[in-house]
Amino acid sequence: MRIVIADDAVLLREGLVRLLTESGHQVVAAVGDGDALVEAVVEHQPDVSIVDVRMPPSHTDEGLRAAVEARRLVPRTPILVLSQYVEVSYADDLLATTGGAGGGIGYLLKDRVAAIDEFLDALRRVAAGGTVLDPEVVGQLFARRRRDDPLRELTPREREVLALMAEGRSNTAIARALVVSDGAVEKHVRNIFTKLTLPPDTEQHRRVLAVLTYLRN
View (cartoon, rainbow, N blue to C red):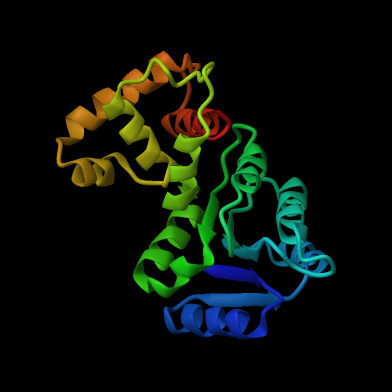
């Protein structure tokens, strides 16, 4: 894959460059601020970009805002955001850029980079157009449910399936995690789409819409 990296921490940035290069990928740009990220995405149109949420000058959400701008200028460009802490609102803002049009999106804690195989797998899934959310983000979503939660009609098992969908897992991977058949997962996914009244469309589009509903409530 052709990859852009944006992180102002030199050690992490160079570490990612080395890791990805040794894994057979090509890092077409490695930058340290949001403006440079946008420029690199527009120029190189990479297969995926890895972006730190907090970058200069204020070290708040410049990386996230740059990622959103990059997706505005290069629609559907895959973005994997890395964050030191769980910020559900950041994940929500990033997912909102899909607009139902697809394009891979990921939000992971930086600690996940240490699990190299899992990190590279998440990167591949985002590059392929998937949605990957850190399990800790998914866990916090359950903690902030409201009484008017549109997911209240889902059974506990359907909620489990939707949580794993939000982590970017395929039906087969969900079946393995829950120790059930692929057919059982497909049935749960169909029930989720029906209960959330998602319009008939492509499978990937409805999966993105389901994750958006899950994240925003």
